[in-house]
Length: 443
Image: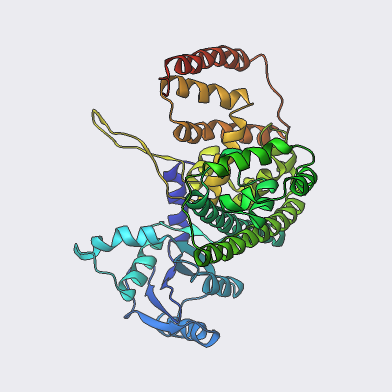
């Protein structure tokens, strides 16, 4: 639906109603009441974040507006941090019409009152109510219990993932100081690397290890993918390591740090898997789960996270709405003959943007509808991350087309996309070979 129609619909919803604007806080919320004409009734006032405080808000509103009822009164709350969640749920359960106002709307409307940027709670409470009457709000929506559970678990997964990456980076930074050559032999995410780091971390440790005993353990951990050549390579690297030499006390301190980070990494991995298993169990009951996983490159894990973070794809009428929700829409600067540079918006759900990026990154390897755009852009200018983000719109368009037709993905050979991909693949391969040929030799 075009923006003008959406705005008109919201204005019609607010027309002729009283609006209570609330600027939420931890202990005391601030409220301002506007009549149907947009005139503030009395001064703004504060009320406690408690049942008694909420009752006092309704009591004061009724004293100022004797004709106000649940049907003709809207409670608008600014979505600051998570402070809005308690009051909005309370008033919604009480039967009041509740809407949400973005802090960005409040911020950008502050200078409109008196050409100054002062920031006070009474002013913000008024602006929340004023923006609501102008139609600058979102409707509060209550979701089904499984959808809420999935979304909460998705937030938990994202926090665990960030913790995992943080501890991984700490270990990497430590090994870069004491034994930087370690990563020439092993990837830090491998089980073999984690096992070895639990026992050794200094070059001297690797030189003193029992090769025969460790080889048996490594073969078991790696399922015979690693052989004695790995340990020989590590010892060879350890002999010529440029790592910092440490005395006994410093090495002991770093050993304690490394052990803590390894334990946290292991725990994060276990907890992340538990969360994903639960999200997947919920997501598999959704019709869109089978459609998403039918697309090569979208795993069950990413499909489950995608469904959890969107809280139901039926909420979106068009793929561009989802693109905007993820913060991938473009800022357009066009005026007269001038057309400015277009940059990504970045205002959106960061967790969803990460999920869409990862899905696009994988599907860009296999799916012609996504791969063709990836190759075209890379042939012009190789900016991998920007190219992946640009290709996300093609993936979202494909997903919405499949949802509309209620079918799984199957490569269409008759639309010319496959032939284009084959042709571009050859050109891209030639370009990469040319780069290798022109690469200067290292002395």
